[in-house]
Length: 171
Image (cartoon, rainbow, N blue to C red):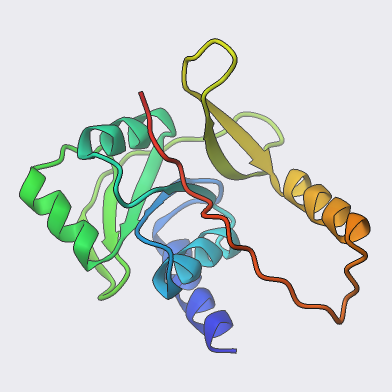
């Protein structure tokens, strides 16, 4: 119940400052703040761009630019790294530990057509060049259904996802 409440409270805040389908980078270690942020982005009907916390600042700047992120959500450690590095980000920065907006922009991006992107993930691609793969909510639900069928998971069962859903590097 607490996870649901915290995620919804953050989603309410996001809805007030972002438009639906806005790309939001989540840059922090796996933990409760990461999970709350990830769910909040989804609840707010925005697109999540997960990025590993050890990503170099130059790669972070590139990821934000490549994915047209409107906002970067981070924690206290990420905030300190950004301030020390003098990062030049093209998006707003939100510290989710104290709900402080550190930087704001008027940047707006709109997807064309009937787009239901849930998350953007990095892939090395067959050519060796980094590509961004956009997964829709239907893609994610299809994957969940296939896993449930393959492993005979019932509605009463509970599962735990151990894989980090974060982008390792941008080149």
